[in-house]
Image (cartoon, rainbow over all chains, first blue to last red):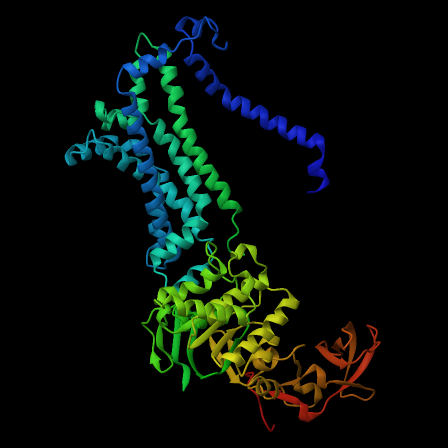
Amino acid sequence: MNKARRNPANIIAAHSILILYTVIALFPVFVILINSFKTRRAIFREPLALPDAESFSTVGYETVFNQGDFFGYFQNSMIVTVASLFFILLFGAMAAFALSEYRFKGNTLMGLYLALGIMIPIRIGTVAILEMMVNTGLVNTLWALILVYTAQGLPLAVFILSEFMRQVSDDLKNAGRIDGLSEYTIFFRLVLPLVRPAMATVAVFNMIPIWNDLWFPLILAPAEATKTLTLGSQVFIGQFVTDWNAVLSALGMAIFPVMVLYVIFSRQLIRGITSGAVK
Amino acid sequence: MTALSLKTVNKSFGSVHVLKDIDLEVEDGEFVVFVGPSGCGKSTLLRVIAGLEDATSGTVEIAGEEVNTVPPAKRGIAMVFQSYALYPHLTVRGNMALGLKQEGQPKQVIEERVAEAARMLSLGEYLDRRPSELSGGQRQRVAIGRAVVRQPKLFLFDEPLSNLDAALRMNTRVEIARLHRTLAASMIYVTHDQIEAMTLADKIVVLRDGRVEQVGSPMELYNNPANRFVAGFIGSPAMNFLPAEMVGGAKGQMIGIRPEYLRITDQGRFQATVTHVENLGGDTNVLATTDDGHPVTLRLFGQHSIRPDKIIGLDYDDAESYLFGEDGERVTAA
């Protein structure tokens, strides 16, 4: 390490900026968590105070668990997010591999066509999507959401991944072909591990909007059995009265799974960058 | 038997014609080197032979069988790449064994062949390491080992030494030459480094713009180049070309003299001003410009103290010069 980077003043400056940023970023989460453990009165009297013996209350959590099927909503959100991410990554990577690896007529056009979705918000087509789901009988199933989210995530995934796959050494793929590996083995065993950082990026980008989405669950799958967590939490937000204890508790619990997924993906991201592959 | 035979092979990428009517025979056990400037199609030709690219027209035969539609893995070839192209997720052993596993060889055979290759390339102690834990030279030896274990009918090398530093390059070059002797295998080797070409080859194929310019043994090409391009490409420093008019020849023709055959005399056929001197210890390269502005290079043996700006007279023997016509072709017995 060189001297400039070891300079204590620089280290302190860098760390204080990072710590400041962390505090700002974590502050809303912190406020949600502390207030979810307070009585309604205490939330409004002193929003920033920690819960103490007098103001401590788990009434929010109790409401959440007693009203509606919280674990069911949670499970639905989880299934929808994980399945959508899986399909986005699988199909996105496969399309990106084909676009970057094979020369065929209309390759560039196909790439542009697949990337077009980045520029067109999928919500514009909500009515048509709803009609389609009604006709195929997929309304009020999790599949309706998984299909829509996969379609929504694919353009960006194809765009990012094909750029990364172009950088994977041709020699490596050719070595595999000479050793008799099938194109699928080359894709799954040689290319995918090398673009893992890009896959993690795509996953993180797609995960949060899917997890937080209210629009499509409300329109395509509002039934009790298929409600997602975000939609389920809306029960507590009324036009005139909002049960803040319950809302904050539900939000508090909704944060954790995304955080766990994020930690998993970001670790992949770091491992992908540090693993030595081709020279 | 011929290890490889190419008949009027053409290759185009869209409207770009990369290989033009390539005809070539490689005998069993022969070491053939493809040389040429970058973009001349030598790597593409190797890829066509390997089956990584399809020939647009023409036939490729390996060991007497037409292989135009045979996938790379079934052509009986093995290839060593410039960037090593080792599988990052496998150990050295796994890298070498993968091709054999895909062929469905029994475990015992795989083990024996890997052990044999590891012994030949002194990789024994690295067998359980991953490519990321090896140095550049070791990685390239693993890549060569991966080719050796397959016992191919034809080895293909695609600029295997370009990523190595000078000392390693020399060692690995010697190692490849030794490997060729011990295995008595047919090898095709692509390079733009003419030292590799001259030292390794039984036969050199000089390519330019997708055409074969000349095929011959290294000394044949050096002593008897068919045209100006080959004459200029083989030999280092490159051959000097001067208009024949300057020394009383026909207009338009060029005279070629190798730097080692030019000598300094007081009454030379022409004069030149020294512009730069490279002292290499063993020999000395003198760069000069003739009176009418043509650059010439001299290679003198031993050490000489010549200063820039000195005017020197130059001479050569007619028997050691080459005459090229206006079209660049060699003119003999002019």
